[in-house]
Length: 145
Image 1 (cartoon, one colour):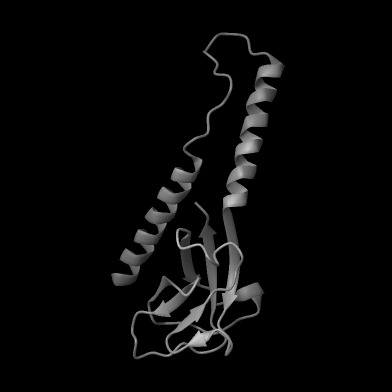
Image 2: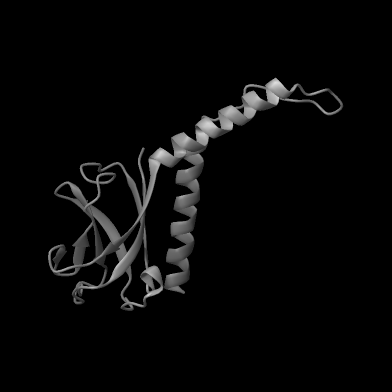
C-alpha cells in the first residue's frame, strides 16, 4: 500500500509539474465550428505548438543514473548532471530501473527519495540502516523551472 501511495504521489507531482511548465501556451488562432480555416492560420498554430514543444523539451531532461563507488555515501548516491547541478529549484523524480538497456541489473527494494545537498540532487534510501550498493540504476526526470 505504501508503494502504491508513493507511486501515485510521484505521478501526481509529475502531472502538476508538466502542467505548470505548459501553462503559458496559447495558439495564435482559434476556430469556430462551421467557419472556413485558412492554411496560413493552421500553419501558425502548428508553428506555435512546435515552438512550445521545443521549449518544454529544453526544460526536461531524462537520464539513467547508476550508483558507483565514486558517487555513493552511506545510504545515498548523488546525480551529476548539468541540468540539476546547482539547481535547488529543479523538480527531480526517480524510479528504480531494474533492467537498464535490457541488460538486467540489481533490484533495489528499499524506498527511495531525493534531496538537494552541496549543489547536487541525491537519491537516498529512506531506511537509513540500508546502505546504497554500487550498480543500482534509477530513471531520473529533471524538470527545470
